[in-house]
Length: 453
Image 1 (spheres, rainbow, N blue to C red):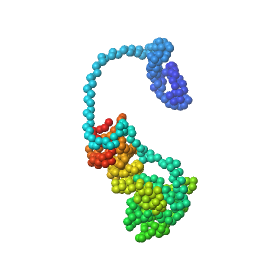
Image 2: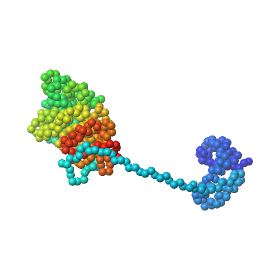
Image 3: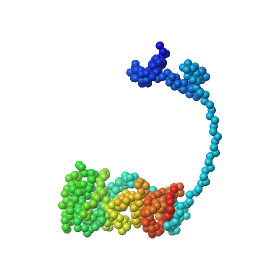
Image 4: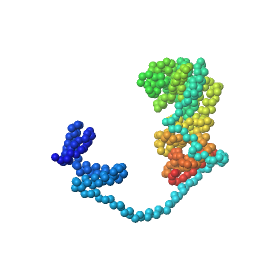
């Protein structure tokens, strides 16, 4: 009878006694019924010897010498040759490293100044660089109005809740936003107070006006989640010589909305096709519900404010001054769709006036307004993807125009790094230089061939 080997089941780990001559045959574990191949005794010995040798070399065994002798005895008993001695390798003579080629400095890029800084705006302090520019968040990061701001608007509305009154909330490139008490919707005179002209263009001469009811979609029930759907169901085509009171009497009640929002309060568009609904919403305050409406055309907004509040109030005077810059010919010359896109990342600040807009070269003309450069009397405002900011004309900064074919990349030069702003058509550079000269800007514009690090 051959010697018995002690092995462990590879499945359950139980210790088993296997005949020494069973190497290479199939066996079944009596505990878990797992079938496995019995290892060869020589292979088991080799594995054990290798493990012991490693332990001996690492010094982990206190009896390293006796273990080594035992290994040699087991090898001799099984007819195995003694292990070969490891001879130290003779190091090859080191070859001297090849000499490094001499470093050649890159030639400085060729630059030419398109316009210098205005000496009128020169200051004694250190010129401002890219890190002093006012960066702003992307449209996807726009902050919501502060709660105290909403509270202030609500207080203003509630202070006039006993008489008809509009409160100017904000004036942006998207239009003029008004707030009023929802109680006013019950008053026919107020619901008929909107000027009978195109709310987008301010055109009073159109003969094909369509009246659309303000869709307070946040109050709607059922399937209506798009205000355009609700307005389309209840829009009304004006008849010749109809008055505003006759229009609201002819329009149907919107059964999908609760009172008083179900009563039609019309605004007007010419033709109606392709015109998006104007934005309106409501929010709750301790003293009642406040309504907000944004009028795209500043001229129409000013007319409506004068009809409701009167032309002698301070709000009318202030809105008249602010609306003037929105009605400037350069701004109104931009298509309505582009102005709406610009409103997502550009708003007028202070008393600045709009001068020009340049579309980014990486965007098709059909995507105009999503990115690019806006020039005003106070600054350059730029946006591309999720990055945007502005550069004031009174700051001493350098813009580098890196030439590449039909386009140049405008790069704001900084102390430690440079910031790419946008891609501009080379043909638009002359117009940009002219505008910077027109406002006596302190921004230096330099043309460069090649790339900017």
